Length: 307
Ligand code: KPL
Image 1 (tube, rainbow, N blue to C red):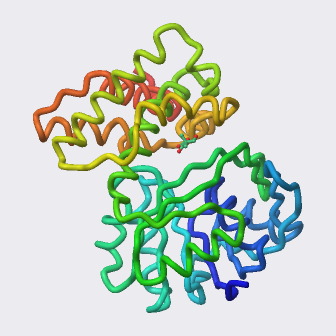
Image 2 (cartoon, rainbow, N blue to C red):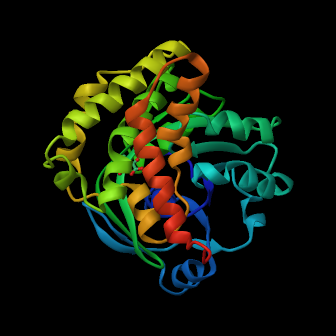
Image 3 (cartoon, protein in one colour):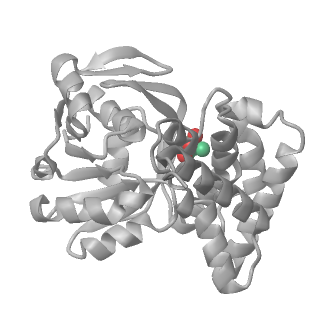
């Protein structure tokens, strides 16, 4: 039996609700920091966790007030990559000195950016593989997977033990940078295509020429990673080939953002590869096309002023 943790979830969207909910389901004391509608639903009925293993109303607390991080020994930092600095600044005055931040985010640089905001705190990167979505306020739906790879830090061993006991397969890795790039490449291959077409992965990979496009994206990403001196963990081509089969009904988080008219993380996915490639003299034309099209769709969703 692992000791009960006090956990705060900063940015309780689908990823935060799933992992925070799994810890609450296992008996840990969890508070979700989220928007009003979501907080009201969770306060009234608990969090509905419709997972591949159970469908239950999980009891936990929720607050719109970021000061609710104050008692947490573990903060699951799950905000979008676009909001890392602003969310870090909001949390900073309230955090306990001993709190550990675990960054459950897409992209490769969030933990470094949060560390720069919170130099006195322990911050660890995590690589997240999960298919989830918010089905409505206070209701998270899980379509599959749900494993984490985390960076070694002061409390990683205890955190990993609690996560594993809560049903979240968790590995501590000395090459989290390489694992983050592996995940980034997966996001670069899938997210924009699913967002532009508003199709789930199973349908995107069935499209003519799509797997060839994905291979071009992967090759460019690997060239940029190589130029950066990153040892990309694992066989990325094999991981990319298998993802659609492991979550065929999943829409990428970028697709979910665009469908809700929200700003996506594309600048931190294909956009990051283009920018880093440019700095290192590595061309990334397939990534550039995907990035530019998603940016255009974001602009369209935001509405253009009359000419
Ligand atoms: O991270 C994801 C995302 O959608 O951003 C994957 C793992 C690709 C799952 O959809």
